[in-house]
Structure formats: structure tokens, C-alpha cells
Amino acid sequence: MIKTGDKAPDFTLVTLGSEGPELFTLSEQLGSANIVLLFVPMAFTSVCTDEFCDITQGLSAYEDLDAKVIGVSGDSPFAQQAWAEKEGIKLPLLSDYEHKVAADYGIAYEQFLPEANLIMGGVAKRSAFVIDKAGVVRYAEVQDHPKDLPNFDAIKETLKSL
Image 1: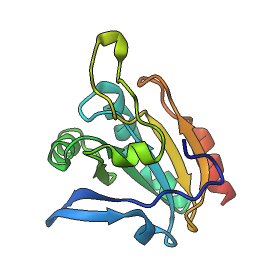
Image 2 (image 1 turned 45 degrees about the horizontal axis):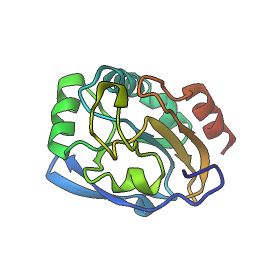
Image 3 (image 1 turned 45 degrees about the vertical axis):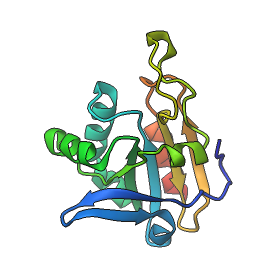
């Protein structure tokens, strides 16, 4: 797993913008703002929806801390767009459809919800990373249970220190 002090692995993922599919490359975003990278297991699930709706309601607090919040899931960008429209989610959503970024960050489940016998390897664990303008991870939190949320107060405290 990526830890505090590590250089954040670069990636390029697809998002749906107003003009259609767009590429988002992490390294191209560095320098202008700190990045709060939030991984969630799946669109349209209750905890993921609550998390991103709550973040949407508080986006100005992150902007005031010179941070841009980015959501990542393994869903297709089209499913993410439908989810965002249905729920009013306003943060950019990136599609890690092949689960490569989750693997690169060391946060992929080997088997998602094994107690339910779901054979869904590669799904991202609910995780939060604060990446500074230089691309260094300043906060890293990975939840083993998909219903557990990151500590958003600690994330904001980290941003205040940057």
C-alpha cells in the first residue's frame, strides 16, 4: 500500500466531462492544488453515495484548504455519470474500470465481500489519500470494511498543515 511520504503513483483515467470522455492524468494536476483522492468500491451503493453526497455538500471547505477532491471507482464512466446525475454528485469521478490504479496503490480487495460469496477481485477498498502539490502522499487511509468511512477531520487537518 502507498504510505505517507511516498511519491503518489501517476495514472491516467477516463472521466466524462461536458464534451464527453476526457482523460485525467494525476501528474498534470499537480502544482495547482493539493489533491484529495477518494477511492470507493462501487457507484450506486448506499455508503458510497452518502460519502460523495456529503463531500459534494462540503466541497467549498476543501477548496478553502487549496484542495481538489477527486473520486475514483471501478465503474464505467457512463455508470459514474448516471450516478452523479441521479445523486447530485459534483466532484470529478474517475473510472478505474480495469482496477489498475487500485492495484498500483495497493488497495484492491482480493475478493470483495467474501462473506457474501461475491467473486469480485480488484475492487478498490474505501480509501483516502492527500497528495501535495509536489506529488507526495501526505495522508493515507485504507478501510478494510467497505462501510467504514475515512477520517475526514484528519484529512482536513492534513490539508491545513500544507
